[in-house]
Image (cartoon, rainbow, N blue to C red; front, side):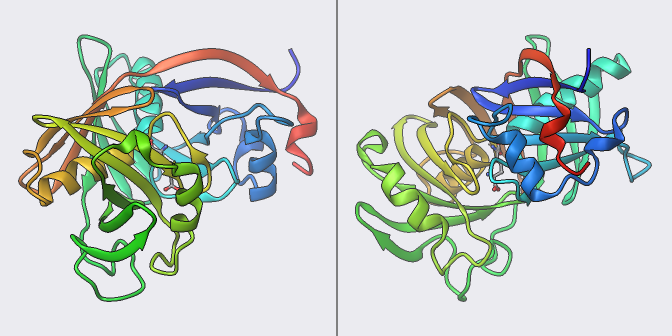
Length: 281
Ligand SMILES: N[C@@H](CCC[C@H](N)C(=O)O)C(=O)O
């Protein structure tokens, strides 16, 4: 078969094209335009994020994971893809644990008996400079309003998130407000936008507009941000179930400020990338 092999995976419908750069060096150092062409659902393979597994840089890590959004831009974190990559690496190692390296650090992953994967997404950052925000404001009450959305909580889980609580998350036109908020001047690196409602004890319904993608069926780092935001506001405890369009993630904000995310991993199919999609590479 011609072309570069990839596997199409997803976490709760948040879908990925996963390449193995350890075996196929042609996928290392993709430029943004090439990544966007591959991720495009009309002209390419189609995915929310394009993932390249690379050799680990750190001796402690089992593999490095590079993450690009659907628009081709490289980003720091992707919770759902980390579970998928961890499941590949754990399979290779014949172990139930793996350390996945990203541009923001080392993430510990553990496979559970029921097939789900837990990832320690690292230390959460809550200072305005770290979200980052463009002004020194209380990140538990960011003064920002648009339509039915106001008073956001800022959380950085490796990547920037703004969480809005509303009475009914289903009623919000996220396609309308998401892109405006993603590009709001308050967020110098743009932001992922979560809209959520408390629907029971330690149960949160969440919808997401992802930076560099749009509406997705799930966002792992977004669910972490929502769990942390709800606990910061005193709306839930530190362990919550977050219900996304694609299903449930369990989030636990630990006393040392690390955040654990637990959820499923799925493989859709294996394919080969047509060389024309790699352009100059
Ligand atoms: N789908 C992801 C997040 C991917 C990156 C995000 N769109 C960003 O730009 O920061 C997840 O599961 O966390």
